[in-house]
Length: 149
View 1: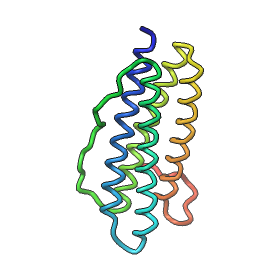
View 2: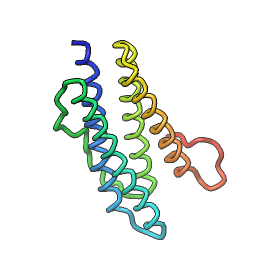
View 3: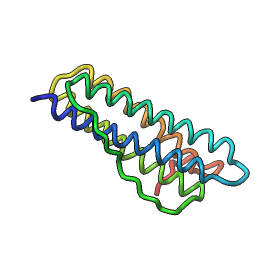
View 4: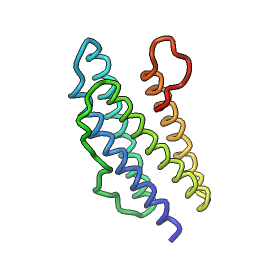
């Protein structure tokens, strides 16, 4: 069945996004210091966004006749709770999610699904903008060069 690859890719996205809900919620609880309030708000917003992304991926799974996964992506506790560490972990998580959306785009092109192509492209744009936002947060004030790990 041609939809099987798409369903598998969408379930992977759903699992990654659900892991994002847990990670961002955890991170929001572990922020301390002078800048706590805006960073906690930003992290909670990311958790909400991840949940919305997971829900959309699940809806597409059922649209294609599949069964949404009950799994959650990798959740490793690093015990690193410095804001910089949290942001670097966020950056790494978002890169994995971005790769999953690019994988879905390839599948969508192979099965000639405009719906999935448009969805994947929209999500790639959102993830790339989010990566840029995190990258800018990791820079020192005045640094114009992108952050690299």
